[in-house]
View 1 (cartoon, rainbow, N blue to C red):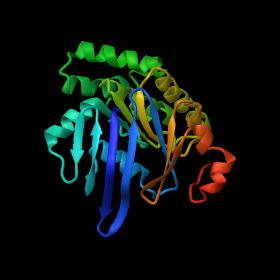
View 2: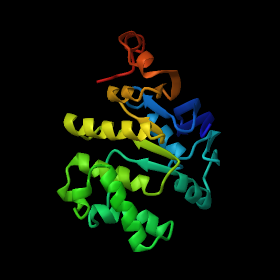
View 3: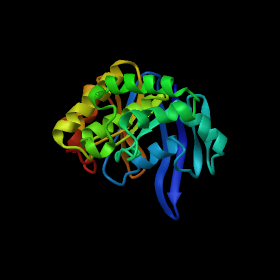
Length: 242
């Protein structure tokens, strides 16, 4: 397994957010986390990338281990070289072009030359369908295009695992379809991913494993067909799907 979460629990004060979560993801596979708002999905994703601490349990990912409590900075630096994250609100640098946004991490972290970093960034922007917009600033791009830049930026570090936090929540239906298509293509290429989403279109990733997160616990897991079926939706009343 490339990701193992063992008995993970987290509280905010006296309020439990995650309770005894156990979850495993194989290399080259896709895990989709679904469930009602406030159930702990995004918090779990942030724990995986070390953006949140947790109170008990452990996370093993790409050979790195996170344990309860504060994480050492050198541990997080090594972890984030192997684990990329795409946020729902893009978080692009507004003063940089798409090309510069994507090239920044390889230049700073991998110490690539400007030419090498820009070549990698240009190739990735072409891969996500933005070859004509490499010099565009984020403010001139649509929401869907900005999300594509964010995906290319994460891919620029060649992560072994990609994390997506509601990648289509801020987009209209047409833009959503384009991002889903891109993520489906990444899945077909063998990219390991963990995706938080309410979007049923991710069921098109036929080999995905869907985990229903309810009140901080894994309430159910199965194939997209099992989880997104009408019968399953009726049986899981607290899970809201569009």
